[in-house]
Structure formats: structure tokens, C-alpha cells
Length: 195
Image (tube, rainbow, N blue to C red):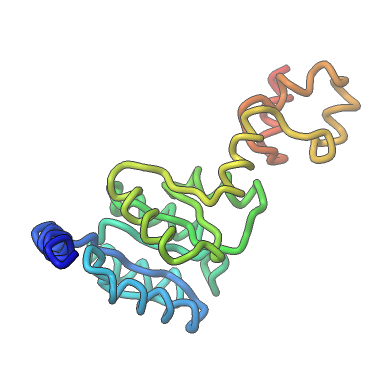
């Protein structure tokens, strides 16, 4: 068993650690993330920030490989921060780490440039796997979030369809109006205005 441990340690020390920044306003949660990253050999936290504004000032200078981003931040929200960070650092991989499961929030975050979307209830081992996954070209999502993404490509349930679209165009138009996209009023209006 000891030779395996040495082999794992040597492999981790030979590879460059994944550089990470954390943007989270909840000090307790942020500190928990920092403790987790500090005891993970293949991860190195470059900095943590309680607001989007502080993150935007510091993160471009550090150029981390991965950013863990909260959605609901004081001042500028996480989605706007993602959009600005991606314009400054197009290669950075951003994982949303939030409590929000709303399809509009998911769509907005992914459209802004987030590469992954995890719920804060994600177990620590899965979060670390997600960081490694996004670093290696994946797009990690909590299973509940992945289900919502899949459902969005299969059509939007009747209960969240825009009532006016159904009345104006009838039920036969539902699939074509909302195919392969999240239900967002502006998106629906754009699609239905072309019909």
C-alpha cells in the first residue's frame, strides 16, 4: 500500500497544480472551499474574492486556469462577472457554484461563458473531480442541473410555456417555438416574431 501512495504523490508533484480563484460572498462557505483546496495536492488557490468587482480587479493579473463563481453576489452578479472575465481571459474555465437551479439562471450563466454549473450541496470529492474535469476539457454539472439542460433540449413543459405564445400560435407551434432552448421570455419573443 505504501508504494501506491508514493506513486500517487510523485504523480501529483510532477504535474503542475490547477490554479484556481474563488468568487464567493459567504465567508463561511468561501473559507470551507479554501480549506478544501489547500489540502488538495493538484489544486492551488491563487486568491478568493467576496465580490465580482474585487475579482475583476485581481483575477486577470493572476490568470488562473479555473474560477469557482457564485451567482448571487453583492453589487455585480456572477453572470455579469463571468461575461467580463471571459472577455479578459477567454481561456479561463468558470464553474458556477450556487444554490440556484432556475433554468433562466443556468441558461444565462452558460451563455455568459461558464463551462460548468454545480450546486453548493455538491460533495467535496465531486467538486474536486469537477475542477479536474473542466481543466481537462469537460463541462461538469450537478445531476439536477444536467437534467434541466437535457429537458430544455427536449422541449419546455407546458406549465412554463409563455401563455401568450400558446394562445397566439396554438399548441402545434410549441415545439418549434421553444425547441432546443431554455424558456426565456426574450428568447421566446425573438423566435415567435420570426413566425
